[in-house]
Length: 586
Image (tube, rainbow, N blue to C red):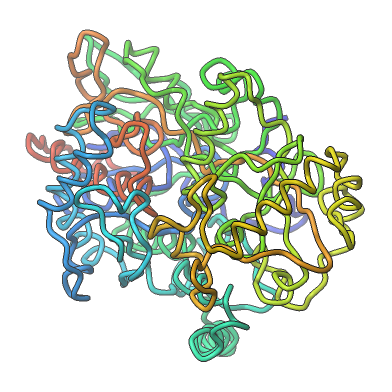
């Protein structure tokens, strides 16, 4: 059984709204995937094209709806209105420094040029409003052009009730707060510090509680993060009467005279053909849950499916592109994301954001030794682990070690508030242990006691001095963003004491980011560098526009949105009219 099958609505004796029924038709642009691909459909509709979005699973939103929802688009109008000191020139210097030869400059340069127009399009075509997550530093801010205050933006909490009956078709998020409250990524930073900076945290908490609980009383259901962004785009499509077919799987591309002219789609065992005048946009996510592909291209050690990406991401778009003679690149790359281990095999891991960076904690491997700057950005974290594996220094187990003081001060995994006990089921599942001494904790974790005690004492010695001489934790502005500013001199370091806890960490991810090679206009390319006429790709169906680098929070969503706009613009530049009678989709 495929992963997405278990998400199918099962409700006996009750009619469920499943959206438009698939039928043979002709459109200008067919978008395969309902994550950032929705931006392509929105832009296409605004430019006068007819568009259709198909979604393989029964839920709209893709990995975007499961994400933090931030987008990294330099020098966009939201940043400018908020007073950010950012320019396209600075962003170009930054990307030049970090991307280097990893990806063609023409692609990321075109991304920069169309960023502002993309944001303006989203503001016109959807009910969404955005804000600057000021202070969320670029992931490599010490490089030339890097921004310590960041370039990341988010969607203001969005009322999901605007989706009407289609809310039943919308994908739920990853984190569920104990009470209804829409928490943005920016909010989470301060919520994690609620006991340390209460005058900053609690006004935000009360605001979100009032918005969440109060909204329900008047028929509104507010959501934030990726939920807000994906729902906002979905609402824009519904308002524009752009059809979104769910349970609609891409079977194959239709190719005539070396040109993609449509696709065969299957919905509920019924097969239809969709012909296109302008092209097919592959936006169906990466190969997150296709373990044979991951073992082939990334590592044979990836035997357990731990991805946080949407369950339908099995590489369909990439495989379809390959059949059309497309070139693939960067297939070893992933938006890696260390997370707390799932309670049961087959469940999603538990999301961690600030937890690795906060003072009073550090990580060890199966040998009881530190192995990394715990506060580094999550993609670099995973890349370093795979590099160690290739060097014969495989990290087979990871544990986050914290003390009672940490536990009493900080929010953990989004649901365990300060002073709250770690749930009993964590201990029962063997993903958490507690002890009063380093030696006893090491014994519980089954790591060498002497090595762990030595690591523990050495870390404490560095923490008291405020300088991580081993891995440089706290040296970067990015590290410090999720630190505790009340801890001096290093907001990421504090010596551990008293009762100790160990939480098992796994290498999860937000999706793979290698795929079809595209040009600066999003056109899919062959190995001999020729565009495949009528075929585009974006998001995680396309190889990362930034090569092997994650420039800042929302770099994956940002490029998906912008290339959606670029693709629509390119497709509209040679628009051919279609007959209205061909466009019968509802």
